[in-house]
Image 1 (spheres, rainbow, N blue to C red):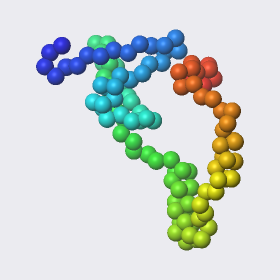
Image 2 (cartoon, rainbow, N blue to C red):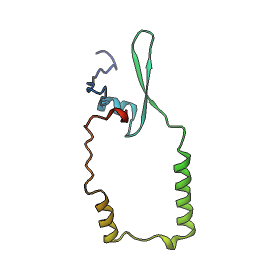
Image 3 (spheres, one colour):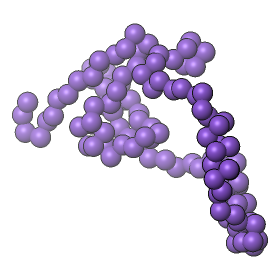
Length: 109
């Protein structure tokens, strides 16, 4: 290793998945759900860069605008979450178990 060069590695799973090492995430200022781009050079080396988000989801943006307008125009409709509401929401996910280390199914790739 010389100068400002930093070398790190990551292992591929059986499903060809990997974790981006923390030093790379920090260097590229990556957060969860960010996109990365691979540029394959003619000599076989690969350049990994952060993709800057440029497009927003028009459906989500429209929905969030609708909510903001509704809250601004009809603030009386806003209610505090009650204990029974919280219990109901928790009951909807009580048996949901997610293992982030589990391999994806073929149809999920």
